[in-house]
Image (cartoon, rainbow, N blue to C red):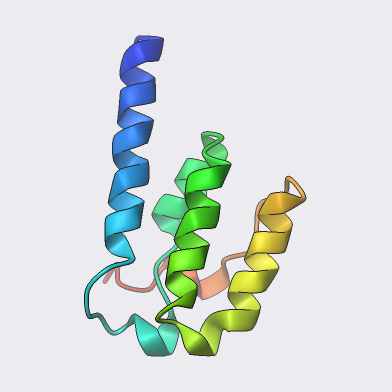
Length: 91
């Protein structure tokens, strides 16, 4: 895959992540699925994931402490432990 194509794909995935933070869903209770966020972090798209966390904070009030922990980990250059948020919504 060319570097240009890879960059375009990452931009599309980052956009998809932002779209996932909109609209009504059952994530208020269990929180959002973080599989795409994890993949984007592995690809170095840290800022997109941090923005996703900010957007999720707007609707996932119960998960404020988790989001803060994940944000801190990402800002420290670490991969957050997303736990069960890697599997929600994949059934």
